[in-house]
Length: 331
Image 1: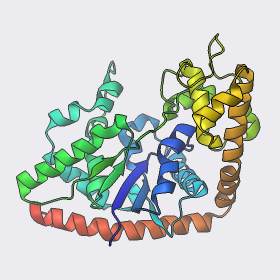
Image 2: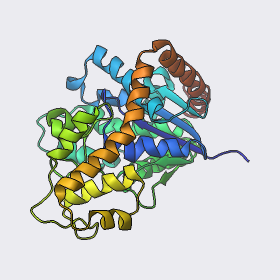
Image 3: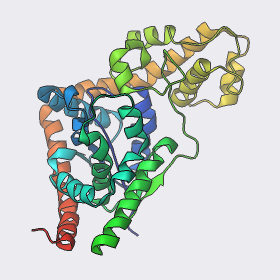
């Protein structure tokens, strides 16, 4: 029996933080044995805010991101890893889907609303990027798209766009389902635990996030100044957001249960809590960082992974695009 197919991607920024790792890459590593997986670096999506794009930096960011994928445990023998722009079908398919998508659907997207709010000028790519997301998914006949509960809207729009294509042109595109973890932790900002750990914020506020490339000293420094509160509650149910965030880091990276963690922290203060969190995170990231540095010293291996992944992705994407172009009357 053929495996179900999973498709997912992350924008290249030159770094991944713990939130990216826990919310995406760590899950991908677990999924690659159960599903046929396509994981890509979404460099086309990076162009939605062109003022922030620098060509050489973008190219390097793609390589860094792929190296971190591989160092985290993604295996090119068990999944397809590729650069989005290396498969031209993504851009062509996105244009066709953009033309078929009512503008009202795009304007309702939460990310567009939040990023355009108060802005004097907004690029059209910020509005139309969900059509590119839909292309990323529909090109590969994805059964599932791994997302957090807060990203379910994107998969729902992809399903709506697929339905619109059938209504307009009679072509049946496979509609995906969101693959939402039964109980997923959201890693919050270390300097503000009321907001989700974010790439853009991390670029502006160094103590906001722990990066996958951070060494042990940096990890300990960032956790030492992480926001907690004035109390001493170190239980999962009663802790304030900052303390709860540190407890989650211990749970995820130590493998211990909530009960075990609470028992070991009973009667201890926040300095011990931060120390344990630092121990757990540093120990988990050390082999990933070492493997990442090894991969970055072997550009031929990295180029080979990207080249092979692009070829495998292109074989499927080009066939889907051909069917869509036939349906709409394009050459």
